[in-house]
Length: 270
Image (cartoon, rainbow, N blue to C red; front, side):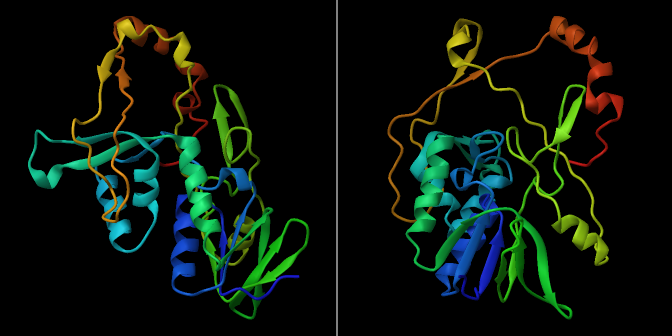
């Protein structure tokens, strides 16, 4: 059913998409595996690219032939150059993106490459011959051979979600965690740890009183991330800034004992 692939990429987040694209552009036959084809290149937390330190990385990826800068240019809805009050070496490009279009453009870019195949399923384990990895095995027991395997599974391997006092397995809200590979790597002598990421709640923009917020428009002359011929941003959306005050701090303090961070239930780094 499956050929032997040059490269198998497990996980189709930003890193997995770049890995699959890079290998395919160099002529390798690539299989990209994900548990949900509709979530390729998903912007899980803040729907933005770039920022301090990260903006330079996006442009370096572009200079090396990657796609993150191009996808960002195609889907941005606001651009700002951060740290303009400092020297030019400190300037950092950042864009806000249409998160649905960002995922769609990544998928379209990969689907246009004839060297990339896709498979939607959880990878349960790696296949070995002696000390050499020779492929992967899926949850349904399908074995797929590959000359190399790239793991870009993000938050999904043994993932835990904390919401207040509740804790349950998951890679993202509404998506299950993946199991098998971490346990296998530990048995092989690798050390497994846990890092954390915090995601703010989403609110309905129709419920906001914008008169109590501070508008932050985009740059008058927005720049781009990519050095290729991508379109310039012409219509931008504003961001809206809010601030806390002592009353908000008091409300927050009354709930610290229910917070997984302050109660010690979350012990990961990050």
